[in-house]
Length: 183
Image (cartoon, rainbow, N blue to C red; front, side, top):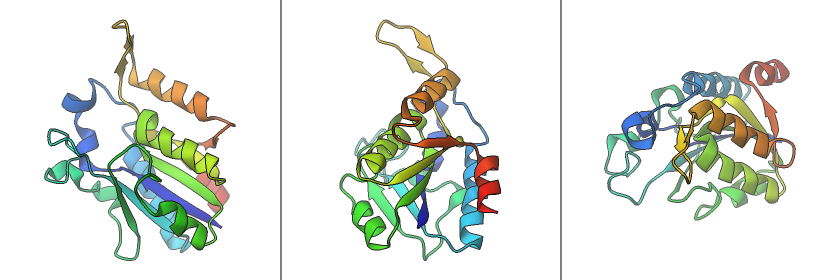
């Protein structure tokens, strides 16, 4: 059985002043919403992950409005939410047990950000034995500064992370392809 795993699609990840100067895939949340709508219509399992930062300055700290889910992917009452304080959706949560006890063997992963929580959770999901499909345009990255001050664009950061995950940890697809496959 296949489930949708939505990772950290929260208001605070719109904060360019905190995470970086640029972010790619401005349509990522809208694509997540389209995928979520399809999973809901088909009554497939859906799991939300919410990052609750332990850093009081973070937009994702529970005391901040940025901790709230993005309106395009707001969980419904029947959809479980797993709160985490680290990059992996599987550390400090019972997500793995919940997935396995529901007979889920395949995951479609979407969310924020490609280079942090999405990457870490994708790698762990694959290592835990799940077959993972990561949706390239339903995730996004921020620009980065290298160890010697070099600048890496958000798009380059995103593409390199997808290349690192491709085949060994996940099948990489786009929203259109996934929605066609789901019918």
